[in-house]
Length: 158
Image (cartoon, rainbow, N blue to C red):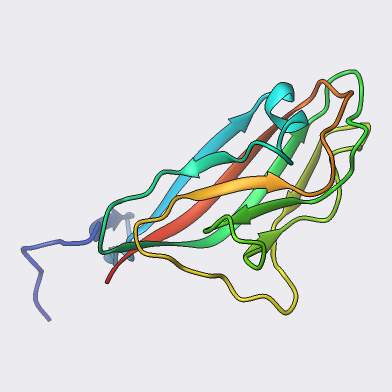
């Protein structure tokens, strides 16, 4: 019908032309954000006792919902001696494993793996809370690789 004049929430209008015809595509912005966080070998080794913030708290009246997460192990020369899963948490409580990976830190080559919703566990969303990564079990004592975590998320206004 008509051409919009106001684009909000990240919407865009793209116009494509060929010799035969012209068409336009309206891409609605859905408010998804993405980030990449890189973990050093030292951070990975201490994850059971020291969580790492992936997304800082936004403020009162806002909740962060993780939509998807992928981890890439960048193998160094020595594998980590702990294969335990990585856990993305919206809260540090023991019942909130909202996303979890199978054990992959002891791999001997680069690995890309998807975080999955924890079986039988629903995320525990808390107003004005950060999103962290941690790992179960004990600290690793060996390993020199790094991990990149790619997150897609949205911020919900309460």
